[in-house]
Image 1 (cartoon, helix red, strand yellow):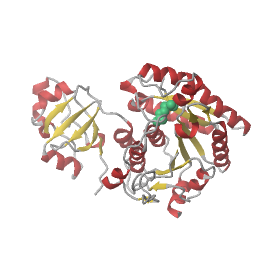
Image 2: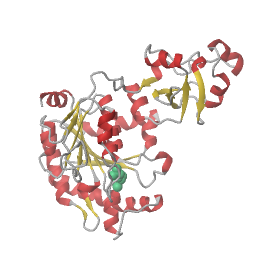
Image 3: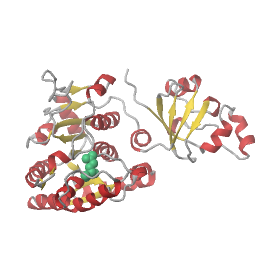
Image 4: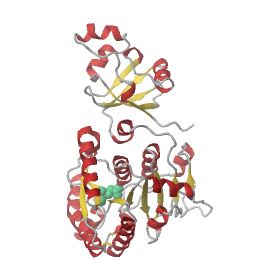
Length: 379
Ligand code: GLU
């Protein structure tokens, strides 16, 4: 497909996400042959001048096999301990496979906070840039061992989308044990059709991605679609494909479609707004009236206190919050100039009244238009 080929030609960076089911078996542990075959493909992309980052699951899966557990652990401390056991084994397998190809690699472990904090986000971006400059392939996983619930991303599909956004990749290739997105579950419905090209992620597409889970992995198809949504809105193409086929990575980069491709949106937001909209995490929400909804969504104006009807959650000034209309539909996310406590006092009021109420000099806008990232529209 020429369009996919052009996308990959325009930008230099490729992110490859590899699921647990491809890498780790409950009894046999890490599949070294699979990692070797992936390493070979990655090295051939490197030889053609691409920067490649790998997001690899499999730490918990490898840990399960290493200590002979019967199933994936369920409690957080048990998962963290199992990941701590499996992660070095996973890296050892990558290190071995890449060393054979004289390709240096680096381990990067991230949590949600590394993306939500703007300074850490920028810092992480600089680290990736420095690694690419040295010709290194970063191998990324969630820092499962320290990630407690509040800072946990939970699935590597979304992690890979956030990494792709962070490093402004051309394409995210999600290697899975399924061939792509089907119209129904192909193991139950023989008529299920594999979708080849998705131009827009409509509610129908989301319905196709009914949740599927397997014993060792986390996400299923629905987290892959969430990841695709994040990427396409940032101008990144996504391919979901079966990683069991050794040629699959090179095929995708050459523009052949070995599974389902999600084409990037034509119009994308500037990098700062992408960070607000698709990478950071919200600390609360603000419900607005119809006037403010129209001003934000259609006229691209700032949010003023007069349009606020409700404040949910406990947040500070400069936190990122979600903006909801009266029906609870998210209009977008933005950086609030006021804390939740202050907003409760100024909601519904005119901007000129703010200083008298709060006894301090204060901006007229609660969320400035430059600090607002609209939710992607599907219709
Ligand atoms: N970080 C987890 C692991 O390496 C996997 C999460 C996922 O599969 O999405 O085991």
